[in-house]
Image (cartoon, rainbow, N blue to C red; front, side):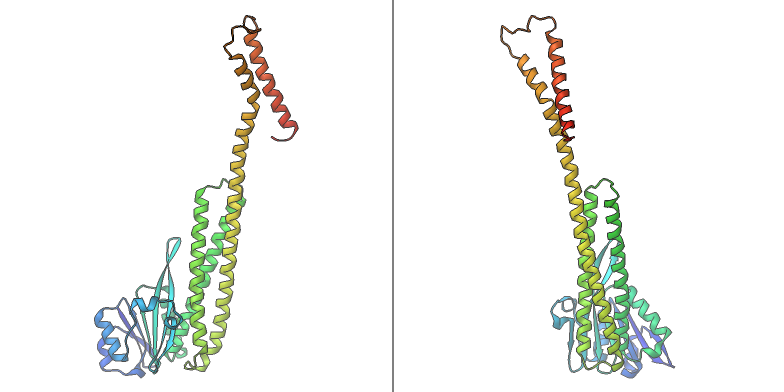
Length: 317
């Protein structure tokens, strides 16, 4: 699907007809958004812009040159965007190309809330988005705001897990699975924000963007740095929570082992007495005694009781 944003009649008009490329010039077009485009739509954009769109493999590369590069005809920037899926995230790469004439081309394979919000801003205040450079910065600003929401959401989930553990409720493997999932999400989130930092730093070093954009870039980089610090704090807190959970599980297991150990020690003297009277010797003093059986029972109970009292006296129980 292709969406072309045109500058006409002092407002922004959306159109999806690629035949407009034959009638309009660079000055008439502000932004070309490609969402899972067909081959025909890609070819039409490439012919109009006189450049080649990047493949998915090129967009997904992690080298610094693949994240941001400048050529004689265009600026190419690639960034990763999050797509929430239940309690986890998937990462989708997005490619941006800005021609020397200031036309922005975005190529993506998934729908993002960031693009819908940026489009609303464009329609509400189109005078602030005179070039594709301004639209790209607006997209990144919206994305950073959304990243902040995700960092805050993960922080609340971490706080909920911490409260669950400190409440004294039983800790099972589901809690550990939840902690591990939060660690994975936090690492993905941090990597995604760090990717944004690399792109913003590259743009800040460029001399081809309008001058009014650079103060906004400074603020965006500060926001990204604070988000990275917050994500690091959440990850460290998860490490602490995981250690606490494992410690509580070990204490619980030790209590169970302690109970079995104490029970074994308490009944050990009784077992010894039973073993002695279970010997098959022909001559035993109590063998013919009428109270021999009762004597053995009482003796076993007595030694067990004395052992239990001794443990309580030593405060081992």
